[in-house]
View 1 (tube, rainbow, N blue to C red):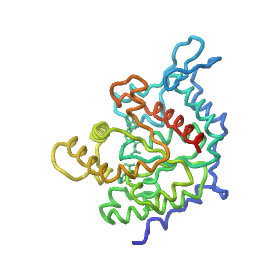
View 2 (cartoon, rainbow, N blue to C red; view 1 turned 180 degrees about the vertical axis):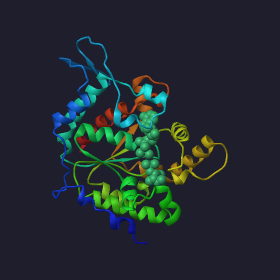
View 3 (cartoon, protein in one colour; view 1 turned 135 degrees about the horizontal axis):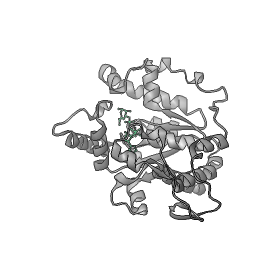
View 4 (cartoon, protein in one colour; view 1 turned 120 degrees about the horizontal axis):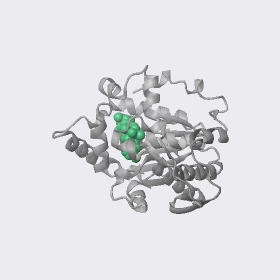
Length: 293
Ligand SMILES: Nc1ncnc2c1ncn2[C@@H]1O[C@H](COP(=O)(O)OP(=O)(O)O)[C@@H](O)[C@H]1O
Ligand SMILES: O=C(O)C1=C[C@@H](OP(=O)(O)O)[C@@H](O)[C@H](O)C1
C-alpha cells in the first residue's frame, strides 16, 4: 500500500538545505545543560569511569527538565542528577562529537525502553537535533495518533510510513533519531540506518512491563491484546514481540544493556538506572565502536 501519510511529510521545512539542522554552539548548549553545575578544577574517573571531582565539593543535584515530565514521582526522585554525572556526560559528548563526523544516531529497542528519553539527552549534549519517528508519522497524518493509524489503516500502512520516514531521515546529518520499537523488523530500514550509528537499548522485559503498566498502554496498540491483569498482559505481549525481534535488535552496531550498567554501578535493580547514566553508557559504547571501525 502506498504510504500516503508521508505525502504530507515535509522534512525540508524543518531542515536547512545542506541537510544539516542548525544547532546551538557547543558552548551555548553545554552552558544550558550544565550552567548549574558547580565548577571543579580537575576531574578523575571511577566506576563507568564516572568523573569524580578531584577537589571536594558538595554534590550539586540537578533535575533534567526534558526527561522528567513523564516520570512517576519515585522515578523523579532517582532522576535527580549528580554534577559528576553531568560532567561525565559533557566530557564524553565533547570527545565523541568530532569522531561522529555528523553521522546520525539511531536508537532502537522495545517499546518503552527509553529511546525518546535517552535520545533527547544525547541530542542535547551532542548539539544534534532530535527526531522521533512516531511523532513524524503522526504529524504527517495531521496529528492522528499512532494507535489510531493502526486502528483505521492497519499495521502495514504504519510500517510503510515508518520506512518512508527512515528513508527521508537517512540523507540528513547531525540527528538523533528515536525509532519505533518495530522498525528493526524490516531489513530495508536497516539499510537506511546503516549510514549512522545504531544503538540498541536493552532493557529486561519485566522492567519494561512494569514501566509500561505504570504509564499505561493506550498509545501502544501492539500491547492491546491478551488476558490477565495489566502487568501480565503487557509482559506476555512483550515476550511474544521479543521472540520475533530479538535477532533483529542484535543488528545494532552498539548495545547499551541496563543490566550491565546496573552491575557496574552496584545497583541490584535496573529500575535504579537513570536516563543520564544510560546516555553516558551509550557514549562510552559509541566511542568503543568508533575506535574499532
Ligand atoms: N531509565 C528509565 N527509568 C525509568 N523510566 C524511564 C527511563 N527511561 C524512560 N523512562 C520512562 O519510560 C517511559 C517510556 O520512555 P520513552 O523514552 O518514551 O521510551 P520509547 O521511546 O523507547 O518508547 C516514559 O514514561 C519515560 O519517562
Ligand atoms: O514496537 C512496536 O512495534 C511499536 C512501537 C511504538 O513505538 P515506541 O517503541 O516508541 O513505543 C510505535 O512505533 C508503534 O506503537 C509500534
